[in-house]
Image (cartoon, rainbow, N blue to C red; front, side):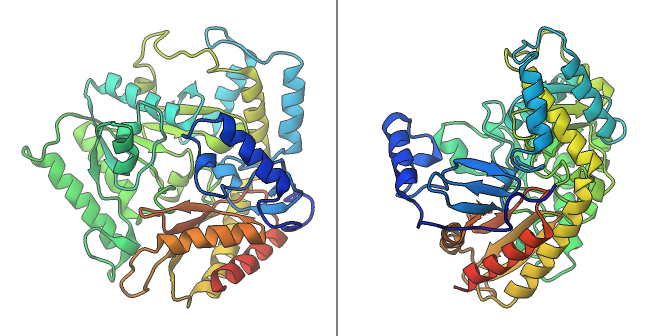
Length: 450
């Protein structure tokens, strides 16, 4: 499938146009302040319709979506096969409580496990990604009989109650009066290594991070008690597409095996073809004990899951994981279609090919930009780190926000991430076309050099 009608953006009226402004005003009259639409004079792009890698606003402006609806539209917006599956399923069965068995539920679980890393033989469904991570931690605690969790700086596991305490950004927890729920350790971030090795081999940062964690696990005065799980994103998403050095995940596997800790991979953002492999951990050949998946697997509808090894997946008693809308047949039918599209079209290979093109193109066009500290990525998961000064590497969140606004005005939907909100994040639908990648490179270069 191509990226949709036409190659790139078409802006008919400056944003926000009259219909968009009217929609924003309607929402602000009736909606609570917790939604992002309440912030600022002009919120993010209002959506009227979407197809492939394109989005239209209420005023007819067409945008090239380089963020895939917060990375959820992996197979593209309104993919015809997903849409057909939803329509067919809607005529047979939509709602079904998780207490009742259905063929769609069995089909989807069998398909997911057939694609999972070796050794992950059972699964449980959730709805949002945060709920899947919460479930993974409950399984880990029950399976090990331990309570504590190790997480990483920059990590993001969602905003469900069970994982809010693992939010690395303290502001997320502080504003909601949620205490920390994990021991936070440095994630190896070669560009901003916590151990001062910025000019060394990037893998040195990974070795330092592992050694620091190793010492803490062995130190009876470190404050760490009985650890149930180490939970980590193989590639950190909201931290700014942070790619760990080669030794890091392998080292975590070794430490978990030695200390009897369960290794949990959160592949909700970085999985499902996003990094040029079906699962991001395949880059390093590491298999976790539990793996959470979501976002793209639903084909645009809300479905997530925990996939895992036999023992931890059988740790909960029947009825201890349930929800009225947990196994909705409509969302499972959409997910089955999305899995078919992913595997039949081998979209992870397209992600690798087009991601390399996008990364090399941006690196060539932005490599000398005085405020671009680094362009990095794996597959179609790419970051542009904005800095005030290339030598000091001081973060420049205001510059990054400006790129998002100018990008929107040029017809691009971009993401914002990073420890300081200074990273422009690109994660387009994996069905984006070669032509659209070229358009994206040209427009991004123009926006950043403006």
